[in-house]
Image 1 (cartoon, rainbow, N blue to C red):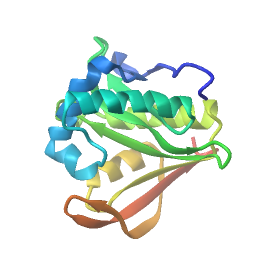
Image 2: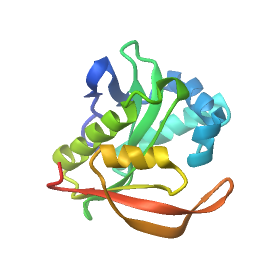
Image 3: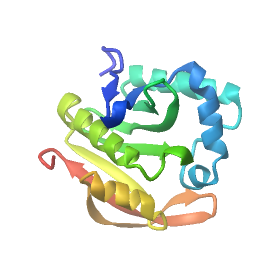
Length: 180
């Protein structure tokens, strides 16, 4: 994985998944200020300096084969979301997806397409066997993304993740080699 440069992956409509750039720092700050993103995601940043450090850390984690995080970008290069794999276990063949999308890009199926694309990459190019998608049971939008992207609902994990408003039960969805 890390021996090569992180690939750029195409999406329908001219969108692409590309590595984060230091010049994208303001997008990370904007995401950290969005109430919807802030509610469902952890590890957000509040300042451009924090954002640049986060982007540098994304590149370090790619090199260390621990994660693969892309910016979801318009044809002009403007980032409008984040998607990728955290908790990559190459020897165990698994990873967990993370994503968010800015309000201006919601509702157009972008997250579903990006999820399908990074899933195909993880299974076919990276050679993983099992991909996880976990979300709060109170987040129906993420449940729709999981189902539309082909992830099967496997169950509910009780009190599994601490959000800003307390502990949430989480749905566990999975996609395994052969599902696509």
